[in-house]
Amino acid sequence: MKLVPAAMRKLERVAGDVQVASKRAKTALKRIDKAPSPSTRARAATGKGAKPPTTGAAKVDKRYERPSGYRKGVRDKVWDAAAKASKDGKVRDPLTGKVMRKNQRWDMGHKPGYEFRKHQESAGKRGIDRDKFLDEHNDPGHYRPELPKSNQSHRGEDHTSDYFGP
Image (cartoon, rainbow, N blue to C red; front, side, top):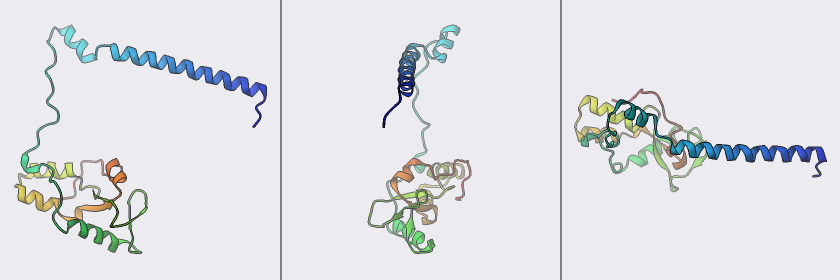
């Protein structure tokens, strides 16, 4: 492809503008990194001491910690239910529509409204014991086969606070 001189000059000018903008952005980021945070400035202004270290996320009741896996047969039931629900008997990833194979890697994805964090919160509010929590966790009706990338992206989740489980 042959560029006419005017187009070439315009392209060079745009490239130069991009370089200048990139340098300015890098300089601004360096300034931001060096600047004290608003909370640090506020503590300094009020004379209060340093903020105590955070301990991370709130502690979860041990009864409702994430189980290490699923009971025997749960994965098979989830796969079989998905195949049965399909018009042609093929299991497809709900986000991409790609056909999945049972002998290839796939995740147990929560159906929208049955996400683990919602189940955990519900269990805590109801005060159920660990056995009941595990019974609910192993309910095949709460899951669907998903490709790992789809499941781990969380794009297929219900992002409301609605929980459809018990």
